[in-house]
Image (cartoon, rainbow, N blue to C red; front, top):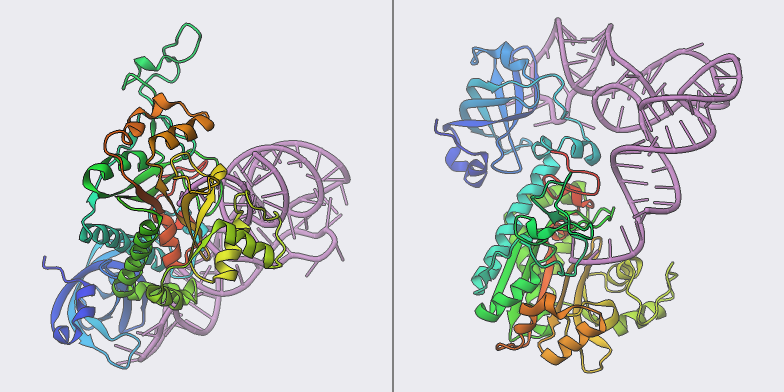
Length: 464
RNA sequence: UCCUCCUUAGCUCAGUCGGUAGAGCACGCGGCUGUUAACCGCGUUGUCGUUGGUUCGAGCCCAACAGGGGGAGCCA
């Protein structure tokens, strides 16, 4: 069967006018009268569908077709008819309709609006709805845009391991990976589990970050990035956290925090521009039904330079704002969600990098600034979503790094290869982590992370 | 993990003072020569989240549990 795609018709309507083609797709809506009926058909090739007109005179199985339920898969052979002035620029006059797979009256999706909560329970069908069809096409395009961005700039794509033998990645609670019999694991004399008998001969977990391994490859290729799934067993129950999510972690050698911010901002702009040109139908849909300021916001952002503010200035701005916060703002405290939101939504009204945080509230590997009080860290806060990027210039000085680890009570033996990087031709370097789902949320206006990942894994939920 | 709200038909919801279940959509039948969340007429659909309690009587009041939403912490 030579199958045509609705997407191609949209991009070249004049050429298709009057031509007979064959489409395969799923019925989104169907209505009929005595002599003719209409089917809204979506074939998955693009956001929009096509209206199929079927007439009793032409279609042999007219009554069977008219009885079809929403969700049915059909193959339509018909003639493209341009219909300027109508709600749709063209439609398909059916000559033949074959039923591939009928649906049933209790098909869970109606042509009425559903709540996202209900559709979450129907996760295996939700890509057939307008909202999720748009979200997941954007997700695919953004993944592509990220790969092209880094590839065009000479970055090497590195696959860091998902199963990690280092239990000290330091970014959160981990999921254990084991092949031992959980009902009767081998024990040491003191009653603890003997991990030396496990599959890898040691205790292993799912990765919470590929950063440390990424740094090792940056010390060979100069510019690298990772893009893969990450797992955190945190008991966090919010619209912005998932136990399994995707992360992009670039790492650049011979670079400082400013280089890092420039890279991050170029990447954000690249992604936005890509989506603005490739996903116009989807963005228009989000703009109408999810967030009326979306297009304006993204278009403005694609033009603008990045904004940065030091942690110290940010604290001052918040204190001087006169706004009432549930948690008071003091230098040395981590910024609360309410503070972050106020900064990005009220004071700057756009994404903003907050840099140079107090060392006490950041990780051991972040580079100590000359003031000996702050580290070269950066968080990118965006309106509506919060933090989407967290990064830093890394501590390349062996003595400063080990002193810092000692202060924090970290065992150097656990990080032997990471520390050795500083002995074998280390250089200043920097990198960051971008939460893939979070940028999809920002680009679509969708406010729950469960609705931008196909089968979300969250606390207490791993359906499908 | 904490705070808070919600759970009634397949879906979205209403349900008064505690007095025995209701609308729209979907679905079925009929009608309709251009609909587009089609429309018009008729009709079908209930373990009121679960368990227990109070009461002559509970969708409604109380308790526990389950599921979901929003917020917080942690982060991406």
